[in-house]
Image (cartoon, rainbow, N blue to C red; front, side):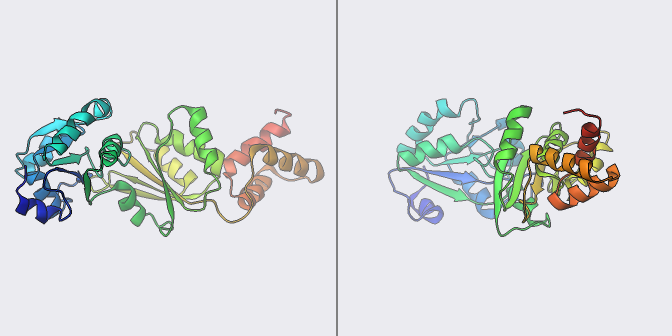
Length: 296
């Protein structure tokens, strides 16, 4: 248990009889991206609860942190929470860390924090890295208002439903995705949102860090040209532009009306509709061809 002097230094509001749960942000890549305070807390607490102890040992070894380490991940968080609460009530201080970034932000930790809060025990954040905020700051998209969505459902239908549910949101949208599924996510976005401005941040703070800025279709084209995509991805997408949005059925009706009244070239018609409704030109072009051939 931390001494009264040290505990007061870390948390002036902490009760002497109970411990404190510290939510400690750790680097998302570059090991130098950790605060002096975070290192100090990790050295002084009684226990560190880590998402992956093997992964966290590299960080702790780098900063010569010898604090006891136990696992706390999505598969054991619920079962271990009562034990952590007992430790806190016995006066032990615990630091919660994830593999990278801020715990409980698309990482384990929320259930533990909620349970500790319910017990009215002290919870203190030790702020630092977050891929969402780091990437947003250099995305080139509006930062005054944003909506963090994290990881969307993996199944196609549920993912499209999730995208549909937020298509009219005005703030910049922030998503996390694995390199294996990022192309599918962007393809689904093109179908639901049209060709909005976006930024794909990959390997933030790491050796092969990369930022792709442009429209969704331009980013998709760049990814299609890569032999392999590595590293966790953060995707930042322009919120719903001002003006009318349009669904698939409305789009079909507009195309059919234009085809029946005017002799447009397919490329010209797709360009006009794409620009007016901020929809992927390829999506409109393909739909025009399908409707021209009498396919529904």
